[in-house]
Every structure is written in structure tokens, then in C-alpha cells.
Length: 138
Image (cartoon, rainbow, N blue to C red; front, side, top):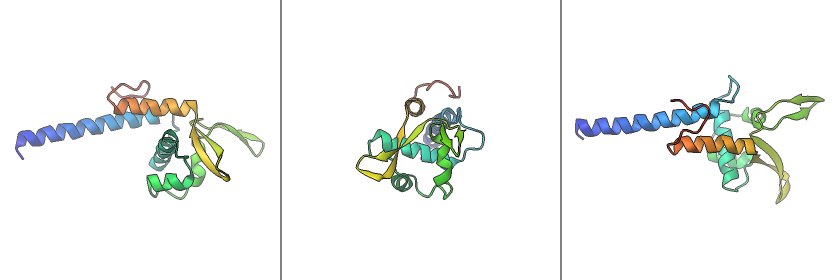
């Protein structure tokens, strides 16, 4: 491979990394300061499953995202809509709703809320080369 070809490859990789970084900045714009990469992966896996109408359960999210940490079974609540818990309102981002699976009421599935869908569409726009709106780096 010539030096010119290597430079072109390096530029393309840097461009892809910049685009991905801008998409993650968009995703992180509304997140609290101490969100883990595992939590972000969880949200994106749930979003993908919901958008493909697979039904985002804990099982298929873990199959899709791989080992994203044992604590995710409690920390996913960050993405849910605000809800009462032990007599107090717990604030959530409102990006996901947890619903009963229509085919098996014992299972719960994650669904994107309209707010969550807006976040995902912004990430998709950035990855596709658009600006994606808020949170995008210049």
C-alpha cells in the first residue's frame, strides 16, 4: 500500500470516528454526568429492537449488546419515564417505556417513547452525515 493510499485510509477512518463521536455526543447531551457506556449500549440495543419490532426484552438486549454489566438490570431505569416508586416520583429521561409483552404477559418489553425516538433519529441523522440537531459537535 502506498503512502498516499494509507493517508486516504487514515483520513476515512478519522472521519468515521468523528461522525461516531458526534453521534455519541448527541446521545449524551441529555444524559446525567455519570452514565456508563454499558447504559448507552443498553439504550441503543433496546431502541434497535423496538424499531425492528422485535420486542426489546432483557434477554434479546443482552444477546444483541453482549455482556454489558450485571448492574444494568437496575440502572436501565434511568431511561424510563418518570414513575412513582415507594411513594415518591423517580425522575427518568422518558426515552423508554416498559410494557407487558402482548404475546406473553409475564415478560416485559422496552418500547421507545416519542422522546426516545427523537433521540435515536438524531443519532441516525448524524451517522448518515446530517447535523442531527442539538448536541452535535461542529
